[in-house]
Length: 264
Image 1 (cartoon, rainbow, N blue to C red):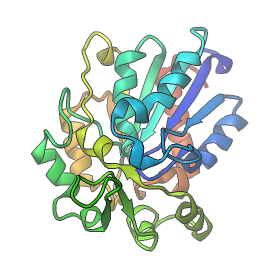
Image 2 (image 1 turned 90 degrees about the horizontal axis):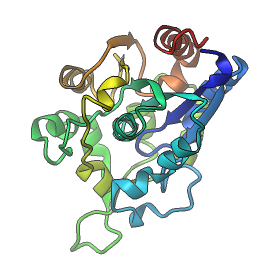
Image 3 (image 1 turned 180 degrees about the vertical axis):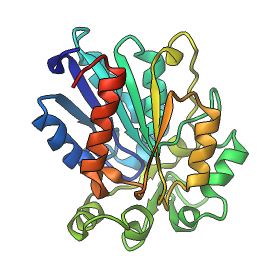
């Protein structure tokens, strides 16, 4: 497959936005690829208030719009990090005819038909007595007597949880740009998928061994309970697109060559 026919679509995780891929975008564009990094609703440069986002469909609509707009003459390599795995799983089911490869970077991939609220073992591995659970701050946009509308993280906690291997200037960038994540989307999203659609898209999991946000044990659980063609380990933190961009780029190129029919 020629370079001009491959279109890389990059999906960020919770609290982040398209901006987190700026190094990956530059490296892919230098190779001659089309690249789109998506701001999901209320994230990055989106003007949507995260307190108003109450369902996954609203949150994920920007990605759906991007994938709908990509012509059938192009084929998508989808990359998702952290909570972007929700969007990846949905896209693999709804756009299996367009996606030739899905790459999960320390991503939360939901079990079929179950939210995190519905998966106590999985949810506990991510949140119960973990560092990230102690740092998530609930915000009550509908008043203190109602469930939280968003979760935020104190900017002073961001570096040690997400960016302990990241350059100081990128930490400052993240502290400026990170936003709250809609609580209902994080905890209540359900994605259903089938072998006939989702199952036809090759999926590769990149496990981050020094991850302090999605701990390696939780990543192992995901790998064990979701279909993966292969697993690649990186000795990096939760955000290798910032901490190890050249190494990540090399892996992306190798995977595209292997699974996207010689697309590099």
